[in-house]
Image (cartoon, rainbow, N blue to C red):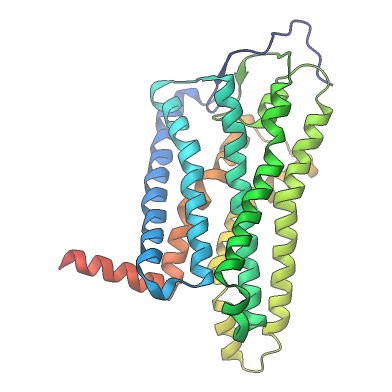
Length: 314
């Protein structure tokens, strides 16, 4: 229960604080944010172009990678430009409607990315357990259904966020201590009983990240079981190597979430600016690193990138 003696009505304009406590360093923060944005756009656009042009890459694993790149590009496009406007020109004001829009789209793309990582884990499971039926099981029609399921879940899970936020009437302040409009950040400055909003926020985490992480772990448990049934150590290594890139991305994507949850369970309270920086890493680092990991670890992708650079030099 959050009560306010002098609450203000629902404002037409919110003010995004950026990174509270480090306002004087906003100019410095803009440099890595801008570099992340440029690297992410170039990397993911390159991945998409290579997959489109190279016919040999029109197989389930790379088509899922293309979906991941599309979501990554969408995610940084709705987050980084707004952050840079805060850091560069102090454009902190955001209308209530624009805030609700961010509140829906930013976590929606994050939930979509988590769903695609689960689909990629299923892809590796099918490839190792049913190698002869791999392309049959993961036909284009199945990939289309998986993409629609990922999209439908994100819409279903995140649609209540702006609806519930719009019902909030009294606020302690119109300043949001974040660099974007996060649902829980808005709830924290609201007055009155917000317990239902907190429950909803927890349900979103469980129904998306929690659900996906559980089944990813289950998939890799079954993958390891199948791999260790292979008598040849060389064949085992080859089978596991096909999962290397995906495992790196999973570790990178879920580790900040797991760290934050464990910190709260253990009662460790981070400084507000540190929590906001970690929250920003959720949305910035994986989209940048995903194409780099697949470009470096996937033979077909690496050879194609080297061929492109070789052609440009000639």
